[in-house]
Length: 218
Image (cartoon, rainbow, N blue to C red; front, top):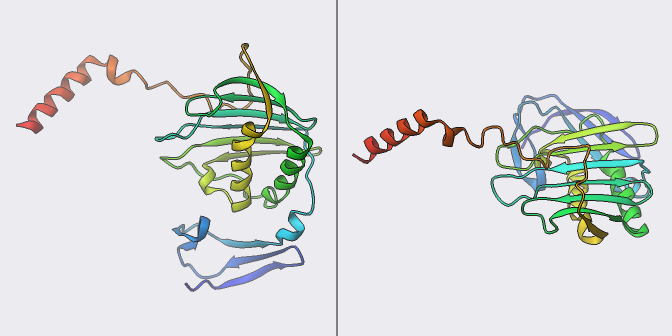
C-alpha cells in the first residue's frame, strides 16, 4: 500500500505523519485495512516510555451498552482511593448492584494502562457502529476532565485495551452486592425502550404487515 506523508513531529516519544496522498485506506485494528477517506494522520508512540508512568485520577465513570449479540450492559465508577461501584445488567457475569474496593495492585495497573490510553487526547472518541456496544467514559484527572464516547472497536489500540481492562475489572475486585440501586453518572447501560412497543401497539401497522406477508406467500 502506498501512503505518502509528511513528518509533522518526530521525537523520543512519538512519530506523527500527515497524509499527503488521497488514498482512502488506513490501518485498522489488529492489522485490518478499513476504508476511511477522512483518515489524515498516522501516529506512532514509544510504549516503553508510555508504560513507565502512572496517571493519577480522581474518578473514572464508565458504562457500556448492549449490542445485537451478547455484549453485556455494565456501568462502573472507580475512585482514586480505590472505592468501586458496579452495575451488571443483561449478559454481565455479575448482575445487580455492587460496592467494593479494588486492590493496590489493580489500582497500579489501572493507572499504568491509563497513561498510553490517553496519549492522543485530540482523538479519544469514535463513531457508533450498528452492531457493536457503545460506551461512555468520563475521566476526572487532577487538572482536567476527559469525555470519551463511541464504539470501542473504533478506539485506538491502547484505548481499546483500557476499555477491555475496565470491562474485566469487576471480576478481579472485591465486591459486595447491595439492594439499593446506585445512580451512575454515565447512562449507556440503560437500554432505550422508546420504540420497544411501537410495532405491537400499532394495530393498523400490524394488519398491513400481515397482508403483505400473505401476498408474499401467494
